[in-house]
Image (cartoon, rainbow, N blue to C red; front, side, top):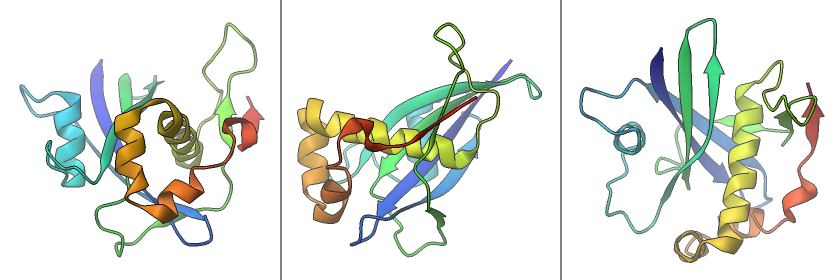
Length: 153
């Protein structure tokens, strides 16, 4: 089984609408997944203005692969081509003991990452201080954690 790192570089506009860019790679020999995420996003380990945080993982059986997802917020390249998130639906499993959804799209993973950052913004002082530098991002993350929709598998 291989491990892949995907990075979702998130950005909110003044109206609170989210968009993202996605990059993915296999870690280089000796490279930790956190390092891969920073390499893909161009963020230095000592960057005080961007959050790099692991938000989820999933198994892709067809590729025999585990995908580790990282959120980077805000996107360090805000003028790059982006994918709009018109719907912040989070995919969920169908029962308590089956957490993996039958189908999952990149938009579901991005919505989950946004919800994760909203939670961290209220529970992690480092994340709170970092995202407070970005009023548009902070305002877009200020919704109650349960406000995002979900879709049952």
